[in-house]
Length: 89
Image (cartoon, rainbow, N blue to C red):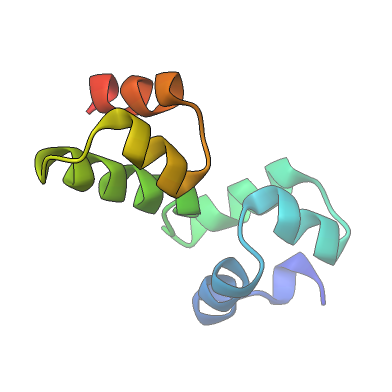
């Protein structure tokens, strides 16, 4: 598949199945920058990584009263990382 053959529908499917611009570029055999340029031409937002979804869950757990230690164990990360995410929210 060539980058020039990719339309909006195909690009969304690639994002869903493969993920980031870098991963799509590796699969197609072109540069990450070329994929990013094509994505911008098609007015498609950057891939929403699983980390954003995870961070929303962490914030919600904190609001629900869970302690940082419990959240860290749930997501298999350090307590300090949990607090960095909460501080940035």
